[in-house]
Length: 372
Image (cartoon, rainbow, N blue to C red):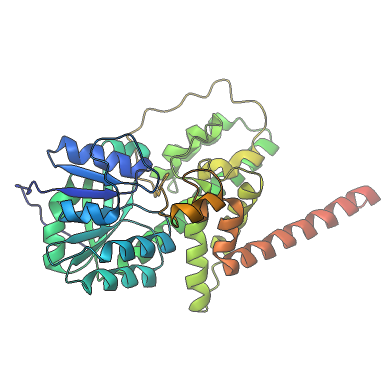
C-alpha cells in the first residue's frame, strides 16, 4: 500500500455531498472550513445550507460528488440516480463499506457516462470525522486519485492508496473483522476478570502495557466500563460489515470462526433492540451493575477506529419509503432488515448460538443433578 503524494494548492470547485449522517455532516463541515463551496442532498430534507432537491440537481451544480450511504443497495441506487446527469466533467467518490463487487459495479455505472470514479472507504470515529482526521483507503486510476486528493485531504489525516477499485473495500472489511473481534474478546476478558473477583481497574492497567493493547481498546475500554454506548459506530453497521465478510468467506470456502462468533454477538444485540447503540455494547451482558469506583478514564489521543457511524441510507422513492416506517428508516435500519441482509452470515451466527445454548443446558443439567 503506497501513500499518495500531497498537493499543496487544492482547487476550489463546487462539491456535492450525498448523505448527511454523522460522518457526512462532519465531512461537509470540514470542506466548508477549508473554503470549498458545498451543496448537499439527503433522502429526507434537512434544514441546512445549500440543500438541493435531487441527486440530479446536485450533479448539475457540482463537478465533484461524495457519497456517504451505508450499504450496497443504497450505493448502487444512488449512482443509478446520478448517472442520468453525469458527464465527463464529473468525479464521483464513493465512501460506503460494501462488497468489492458492488463497488466495481458502481464504478462501471459512473464510468459508462464518461465520469471518473474513486473508491474511498474510510476509517475513523465520529470525533475523528469532526476533527478532519479520517483515514481513507482509496482505489482508482492515478489520474482520478490526483484529482480527488484535495477533496479527501479536507477531512483526513492520511490517504492510503490500496490499488484498483474494489481492493480498498476488501481492506476495510478485513480491518473491521479485527475491530469487532478485539472488542468482543475484551468483553469476554472483562467477564472472566469479574468472575474471579479481580478489580477491573487492574485489568485496564495491565492491558495498557500489554502487547495486544490497541487504539480500539484505548477508545472502547473506558466507554465500556462507564456503560457509555453512545454510537460512534453502530451495532447495525458493524453487523452489516461482518455479514459482508462472512459472505465473501463462504464464496471462497474460508472458515472464519472468530468472525462468525463476533457476528453472533452483534445479532444478539440487534434482537435486544440495541441496533443503534455503539457496537461495543456487546459487552453489556458481561458487565456487573456497579462501575469500578476508582476507575478514571485515561487521557489518550483519539485513536483510529473503523466506522460507518450514522450513515443515512438512500432509500426508495418517498411513496415506497412511507411503507418502511419512520422518516430516514432505510433497509438496514431495522433489526429484521439487517438480519435478512446476509442470510449466510446469520446462519453461521445461528450455529454458534445453538452450540452455546446446548453447552449451557448441559451445564445446568449437571448442576441440578449434583454432578461436578
